[in-house]
Length: 431
Ligand code: CMC
Image (cartoon, rainbow, N blue to C red; front, top):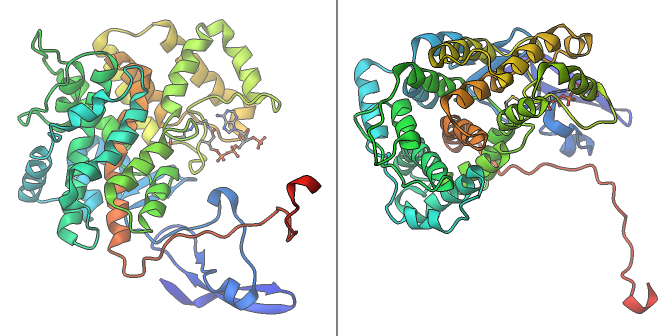
């Protein structure tokens, strides 16, 4: 941690201040500015946190230049190929790969919590049928604290554990219910004899009128989508969860805040926006028009699912997802519809065009996940809820890590104030 052989010095108004430097187990050194205001009377300014580490964490590591993503040290491509979502959940939450017994026990604990309180069904019915499923999820996940009082005491480690398991187990049920509600079909109860991904597919696509058979290739692809989205260190929604929880708020409220943040098109909402963009482009001959718009500084249009704040070479998740997309499309025999043709041509052009190459704008994970989810039959409005479902374990793991840290402080950023300075109130008749 603090490396006594290293320090950084900053000079402010001719006064030199030595700042400690922390050495992480991987990644760049971190200059500790915690005492800067007390010693030098200045704040630091870093909009978008491009150079600021907001916390210590031992869960996930990303090297954006190398295109590397590690969960507890294990690379994402190995986890996607050899592991499965619930095992990755265990790894993220507890720090090690489980033994066979520990995994069995964990899977049983998650499976036994998949049903939601029956009264929650009524809560759903208060929403308009045409509500976006993310809007419903923000409300219903937040409302979990009104249904599960016995797991909201954050000072009790047992309650924290139960809340974590409940979130991982129930968010798929809630996401599927949000979908069913939006299409006017009855809710489908979870089935404990199915694996996590198959159960979710069944809760989304089964109807009482006929039996639903889960296709193992689709369920494997679903599981991979979950695995590849499970955690991504201190992204916007995770930082939202951490900031919300720093005040001592309960975990259901904090995860609801994370879902709200994820919804935005610069974050999790990009997967929906990407497919809608591909459909808007419509045919391959219109691609140059959209590429020109993406490059035009006066046009706010961006190629959705291209670019990433951290990955500046390639997104390692996208590599695995592309392979999954090929498998699913092959299985379903939809190799050449218009949307797919546009996607493949856009990918090719963007990888060769100097604007995208120089700015290092590569297709990110959601470019391919959207294509898979569309092929599976999910409407675009369900893409971000599925991301939220998968990311719940990341939020929960980061929340648990933060709460267990004895050094936890409420998050309270400073500001660079640019408003009016002191002025006296003016009575209305004199304005
Ligand atoms: N299309 C066109 N130009 C782009 C794009 C894009 N998708 N992304 C970035 N640029 C340009 C941008 O205009 C800027 O140009 P200049 O330097 O000339 O001003 C330059 O590239 C750097 O962009 P930035 O906005 O400063 O980069 P950032 O690190 O703040 O933003 C990003 C990262 C992901 C928000 C951005 O690339 C973007 O808006 N992409 C589209 C939305 C998207 O796909 N988001 C999902 C991210 S992955 C899933 C997740 O983790 O949530």
